[in-house]
Amino acid sequence: MIFPKTTISEIIGLLEAVNDAGGVEDAARLAADFDLELDEILPSIDARRYSGLPLLWMAISN
Image: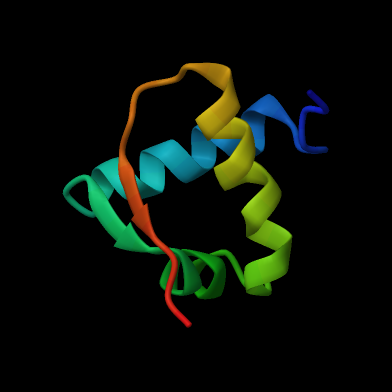
């Protein structure tokens, strides 16, 4: 398995943002909040998934 290229601070920031939103947040909205494109935030979402960190739901919209 190849771990996505991201930093622990990006993953933690993502988890904090989702937690602040009540545990559920749209991935596109998160990306916009961080002034990023959706494809720039996806590695952090994937890394959280592979890391075993607590599950917080992040919806990926089309």
